[in-house]
Image (cartoon, rainbow, N blue to C red; front, side):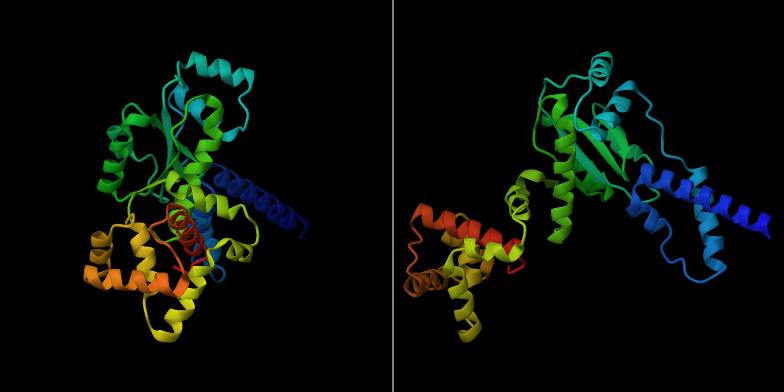
Length: 298
């Protein structure tokens, strides 16, 4: 009986180590995906054993070059140590030129994405936390967009930066771009952090309900009127602002006549007192609509 208990404890310890190693290499989300659907006993044990065997048979790809090994460490540490700085110089990685970091979502079976490496020969790519991280020239990221579209991949892209000290931060900005794209259920393949910068600022504000007080009061007025009268003032104003106050393009996007939109905008001015030809007013309305989008009101 004691022997069986010891064997079970040893097996549990080994399994825990196996799963910890897998999370470290591929990320927790990939582990959950690999083990999804495991219900019942002993079927679950059998499936878990098969999953463990698959993990052992398919270890993460090694870092083939000194550059890739350095990149892996840069993604892991917030500060560049003297040793890592010397390795950067030895690997002849040039961080003086403008660069971008991209993070490509990977499925469990995507392994090394040879298509991406082939299409971006000048980029340095490593598998990191269940995704493919790429360091590439800022001017050449258009090729990334093409390869992602051709292979049905989604990538978050950082700001343009220089300097090895910025790699850690820019990698996380690329991750945030992917997270916001998923949050807003956006289609497409390439998501630049710059397009979500204001949302990132809003996410740092703590309690979302506090954001309501920063919205222009005219938006609430228009929503209330629309709810009572069945009008479309709130959406019409949003579309007008999104198209840089271009009446023709906004009307086309709304599938209405230009004169119809012009009438709605005049009524909005009468109902709220807004001066839509004023730059400061349009700025306040634009960021208010961004807040509304962040809160799921648009």
